Length: 160
Image (cartoon, rainbow, N blue to C red; front, side, top):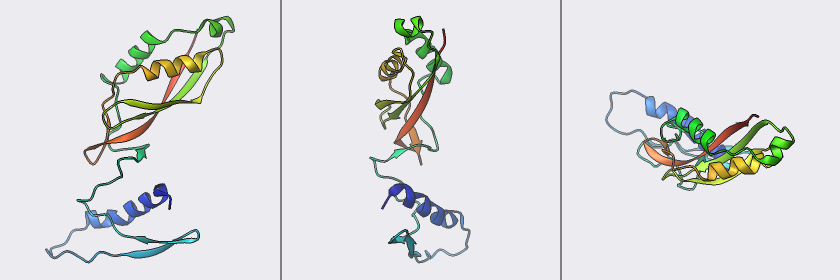
């Protein structure tokens, strides 16, 4: 079963229980439901507030606290502009545009799995990947206060 399909469903089912107000101190029984998803029947249980949210290998795309370059967005722009060297081939062919780079900010802030989502010719894609791979560790993203792996997409503009 695809975790990306189950997690939102479980979260949706757990949300009312997290915000419920009641005067009783006895816990309510856990509602277990059977759902049919495609050809499969799955068992859905509400998530408890004290349970871990995720498997450590899961890569999030959106979290409560997104990862951040040390010093913030302005520092990231300064870093990119100081490190990028416009390739000679791209200059000769007057190639300009935006390269979209995707990478994962790991739980310890390291950058991994750097790849191009949309590149340009003339060596611009390779230059963007080189600069991103050389970035210092980021402040990791957090979900429920715990550091998690987060996929980050970064557009890098090349202009002559």
